[in-house]
Image (tube, rainbow, N blue to C red; front, side):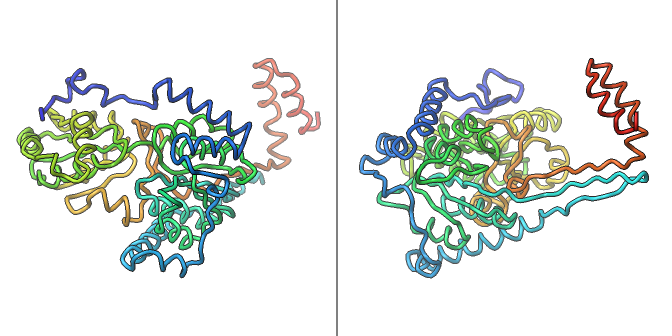
Length: 425
């Protein structure tokens, strides 16, 4: 592999200053699927699933009963059950601490203000094929903590039905409904509703290109968390970083489906050259999932050299990664200046896999550089805020002339009159 300069925009090949810009064909296909599901409901879902997933898919395949917890536990190994229970515990602790109290105060003139936070009534958690059981936990647990009354799970089937770990996670988290459906058709069903599935107020969870584009197009009919699509990772390493750890992280992320951007960024050219040499000496054909790993490394991975700390931080924030790994001796100076990243994993002892499964933070993060203006999934995604304003009589009288002046300056005489009416004029 070659080491390229952070200032060489041509060599970076679109790694920076990205945005959600799927191919026009996908945009059109997704629009067609959403319109079809909106019009034909379950029949359209079945047709889509037969076309894209399993030709044996039928009406009885859509909704999957969630077993009782102990029955579900019998179908997973004790180790998997223990891991998922630990994940639930840590996700719960992390999100419980995100609770915010309502705000209420009274001004000196007696006017009252408040912000009241209320849970959404219904949420769909999309769990893609990659780590679906943990995706259920990371979506359903904060939803339940927030007080969401109806939490449903949408996840693509795996062979005949759903993985046992997914059903165990659903039972463990108190999920209300589970559906074996994925892709744009799953988003459409949750947004518009069908005979088998009532619509929801919000859809959360990461997916592939079609799923993420479907969330974008469905926004407005229902809410979405962010454009949480295919994985993208930036590793920032200094001269003291372990090159084997860096390469291990690259290989781990390259085996994920749909990885789009994968890079190592450093001020240390010797470190980058050591990483390049390790990759070049690997026989990728001997690795598990060798075709996927090889394709991702060759097509999507870059080793980027920054001249100095300023250029490194500028490149980092322009990249705006969903997942940022800081393999540096002292992360504080970096963390103070990182303004665009979904989730940050600090230090050699924090591989990204911990965030995928057991850390307790959410692995649902904005992708395609949208971390510049969006955030990782949090408790706030499962609530909405209601703002309350109550003027006192004194304020209504005091503000009347000023309100009227502003309204009349914009050519809105009836606005002005509503203010004057409250002052007795």
